[in-house]
Length: 113
Image (cartoon, rainbow, N blue to C red; front, side):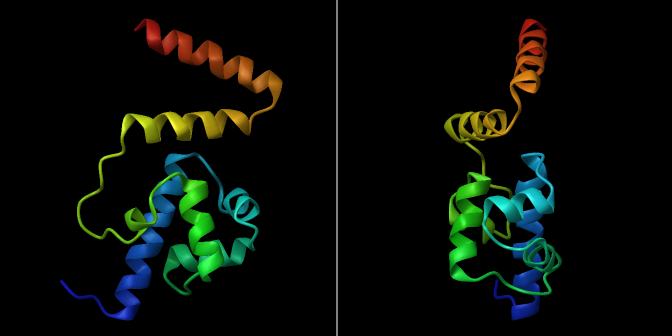
């Protein structure tokens, strides 16, 4: 199926938002990690604007997904165990030492169920 420019930008933005929220990142934090403004992320997610190629590649890297996932407008691609692991490691690395200890306790409790 072919999409016009406006539809493509909206669908792309929806995917960016989906993967951002999956990682628990705010627009501001994603912007910081991608070295762009929060307005760039907001505009991208709403389909109002499209990121530069530099930000585009940074988004995929930061969101821990292949670039093609951001352009997949069909069914959600299956995220492999390796990709899930990488996303968890990345999120934990962003935590303070105190919050890492809390996260470890939560993960241990979840693993026991």
